[in-house]
Length: 294
Ligand code: GUN
Image (tube, rainbow, N blue to C red; front, side):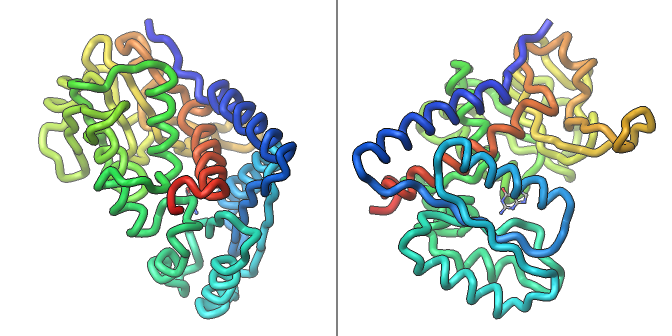
């Protein structure tokens, strides 16, 4: 029987800590952290995510600015907005919510963001600094996972960690962070992906599994070693006629089956998801205090 790694609760605790720090900044007459978010188009999931980010800013006492643009915006117009945010001294950090419409090159947009304000940690400058162990903004999901491991005192040193999925925003960065000479870190990391042969051979060796594949219930009990720690990054919509909205959320891990074998597990929803917003808030606070780039 597994114990739950409660991301929802931990995210609330961290938000309270950030709010307390903002209160002190305010009392001492310092600048209040200010996050801006750019949302292009009407992607339903993106609208939910951005609304949640803005609401979280309000909850901790940050200033926030939401810039909404129609799908028809050109790449040049979006680059102009980025330039304005790069030079706006009141804005400490900003994000451009992805995905963008097909006619806009996401790489050009990511590269245009000043690394000092790149609180998503997507710019290659921040990615490279992360890989070299230099101060950087960590991308939201890997940062959230590291926070969970840290706050729940989950030992990673010398452990075998299997990461499944090699995306730029989750699998690849978390594999780097877990292997860094740091705490949490110092793990032996195996990065598995769609071309991995005999995946189960690796997962059965894992003390910690990070599942970031994007396929519902992909990791099953027969793939998990007794007592393993399971971090489930998946947020998959599964058709469910019994729900009013017609679907339910499922992780990349078959929770019902795996829960009996693992020692600790993140639920979906309420696990890794809520931690991503706190990562963004922590990065914005760092940006405001000049902790990453001075
Ligand atoms: N789309 C999905 N996740 C993210 C994220 O963390 N940041 C941005 N900007 N877009 C996303």
